[in-house]
Image 1: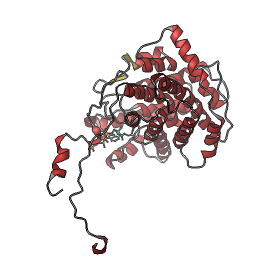
Image 2 (image 1 turned 90 degrees about the horizontal axis):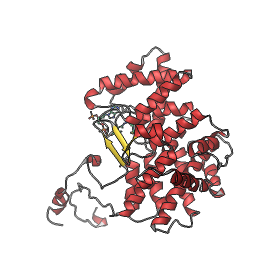
Image 3 (image 1 turned 180 degrees about the horizontal axis):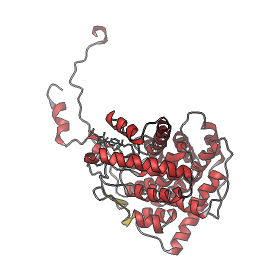
Image 4 (image 1 turned 120 degrees about the vertical axis):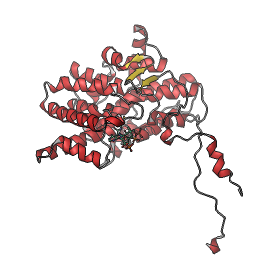
Length: 392
Ligand SMILES: CC(C)(COP(=O)(O)OP(=O)(O)OC[C@H]1O[C@@H](n2cnc3c(N)ncnc32)[C@H](O)[C@@H]1OP(=O)(O)O)[C@@H](O)C(=O)NCCC(=O)NCCS
C-alpha cells in the first residue's frame, strides 16, 4: 500500500460495537419502544395479541401485516395443517443425531437442513414459492421440535393430527396425550410471545443470509444457529440452571440475595436479565410472570421457583438500577414451560418453534426490497512486508 489508506479507509463511517443503535433497514413487522417497555407486532400490542389472538392468527398478521377475516384464517390454518407431516428421512435424522451431549438446537439445525433436501421448491425463488416455503417451515418446524422433544427422551414420535390447532397439536405430539384447554392456551401464548422481535441476532442472521439471494432454508438454519447462543435464546435454559443452583445453595443456609450479589460482584451476567433495546420491563416477561403467578396457586414447585425468581428480580433491579437491567422474556418463560412438562434443554427449541414465523416474515420482507448486506470492518492489523519463507 505504501500509504495510510488502510488506516483512513474505514474511518469514513461511524463504528458502533455490536451494531448498537444502527438502523439496518425498514420493516412493517415489529415495533419496540425500549424506554417504555412497549412491543407490537405489525402495529398491535403484544398484550392484546396474547389475550385475544391465536398463534395461527399472529402468523397471518406477521406475514400479511393485517389480521385475517374468519374465512382467511380458516383457509390459512388449513394450509398450515396440510404441511404438518415431515419426511421419514427427517424422523430418522432426528433419532440418529440425538446422542448424549448433542444439544436439541443442534438437532433442530440438522433437521431443518435435511428438510430442505425434500422440498422440490427449495431452489425456486418466485414470491408464491417463497411464501409456500415459509408456511411449510412454520408448520413442519412445529412437528420437528415435538419429535426432538420425544427423541431426547428415547421415545418414538407421535404423528401430527389434523383436528388440532398448532399449540394443541404440538403438545399432543410431544406428550402423546391431548392437552387440557388451560395447557393449550398457555402454550399458544408462549408461541405468540416468541413469534417476533424486530432485528435481534437470529432475525438479523436470517436477513443477512437471504440478502445474498440464497434459499430460505439456508437463512433459517443460520437463524437457528444464532438463537442457540446463551446471549440470545439459550438464556432461558440457563435461568433454570440458576434457579437450581440457588435452590441447592439456599438449602445450605445461603440466601438468594447473597448468591445474586456475589455473582454481580464477580461481574457475572445473570441469565434472563438485560436487553440491548429494553431499558424498562420487557412486556413479554410481565405477561409470563402473570401466568406463572396464576399457575403457582396450584403447583408447589412453580410457587417455590417463582418466589425465588421474584427475589432475584428484586435484588437485580435494586443493585443494577443505574444500568436499567430488568427481566427479559427468558426469565419467567422457563418456569411456565416447566409447568407444561417441558424440560430445560427443550426451552430454546420452543423459542424457535414460535420464532420461525418472525424469521420467515423478515426473510420475505427482505426479498421484496433486497440489497446484499456488506458492511465494513476496521482493519487493525498494520502493514507488513512480505518476507520470503527462507528468511522468516
Ligand atoms: C441481553 C444482553 C446480551 C444484552 O447485551 P448488551 O446490549 O451488549 O449489554 P452489555 O452486555 O453491554 O451490558 C451493559 C451493562 O449491563 C450489565 N449487564 C447486562 N446484562 C446483565 C445481566 N444479565 N446481569 C448482570 N449484568 C448485566 C453488563 O455487565 C454491562 O455492565 P458494564 O457497563 O459495567 O460493563 C445482556 O444483557 C446479557 O448478556 N443478558 C444475559 C443473557 C440473556 O438473558 N439473554 C437473553 C436476551 S433476550
